[in-house]
Amino acid sequence: MDLEESDFNLIQEKNTISLGFLTITGELIWSNKYPVNKFLKDVVSDFTSNVDEKKLSKYFQIGNNFNKYNLSFYDKNMKKLKIKNNCISLGIEDLEETVSRLFNLEYNNSSSTGASSNKDLKIFVRYEKKFKNLVENFEQFILNKIYLIGKPKLSSNKYYLYHRHLKELRIIKCPKVEINLTHINNFSLLDNYCNTLNYLYIYEGILNNDIQYSKFYSINLIKNEISLISEKFPKRVLHSMIFIPENYIFIIGGKQTKEVLTYEIKENNTEYDEYPHLLPNELYEPSLISINNKYIYVLENSTIHLNIFRINLTTISPFESIKVNRDKNIEITQKFFGVVKNKNSILFLGGQMLNNNNKKNMDKCFEFNYDTNTISISKREFIPFNFIEKTFIPFGDDIYIQFTECKNDNKNDLKMIQFNGREQEFP
Image (cartoon, rainbow, N blue to C red):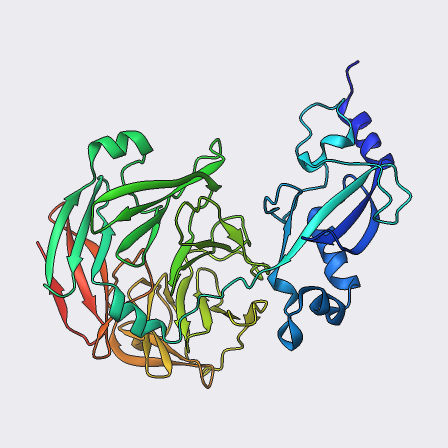
């Protein structure tokens, strides 16, 4: 018998299940009945809203430091569930299959959940601190651990490799065998990357509407080895990445998305996670910087207003919108800029400067004081460098660096930009 989509929707509406949340040891925490087309995110929201945090903290023996955003959810095979805009019936391939296929989990007639439904779904709950490996001093960790810095060479399968201690720059070819195995494309302006512990992580940028996924891969800068982490990361374009020591990467921004992805750098990890809070709005090529070893500041000026948000990694906070104080005569026209810490301020470097009525602002960079939330015009001269990795890298003695490619006589020249104003040019 063939079923129309409308018939299947009616079946979904009529079918309900009893969904129980249990501890890993099988102790029931809470249950409720839901139609099978209920969104997963709404089900989890019901759970975290209806169950008292004191009760949850007792189940997981956490004490006063309990944070509901550290809860993770698993199926019966202990595979972590991705909580997003999917309904409970996700995974049914045949319209005539029964709800016993939901989630690929096993339903049974047990009354352990205390519900009267004939179909029971068990979701297991773990308390797992999401960012438990944050170091005390982000910058010092980078200075102590990172001595190789990479940058993909545009329109090629080569990359620039800079040795911080030797002050030596080389151009490295990606191994042809590994290129063929991983099917990576030539590096482009759409790809985003960030440097971590002597590795380069690259998140492929995709514009093609017919392509559903993006590649996420790494290059071991010590051994010149490419590792394809996954071919099924969400399609992204106009996104940005930042490394948070000791072993996290945040992917923030992009066209047609408000979801923030995180990746934990550990052996054999092929999965991304989702930060439990969405961005307030779409952000294109946001500039990212960590402040005071616990905040990520997100700065974006692609539209008519400068957006500044921040999250607190220690509390897994929602995105806080920063109200910027500025002189009414200052029009903030610098866009797609890199960012570097300057005492208690964030200095905007490079990017684009749009035309405005106040010509005296055109030759200077802007600066944001995160203690007073004020914008000012800095003394730093504006130069229109294009930074793909927008976070400047600590280099020692309050010096920060970042790399950019500049067109010169129809070829790309690499420039190393230093925060202290010096600029070193490489052939």
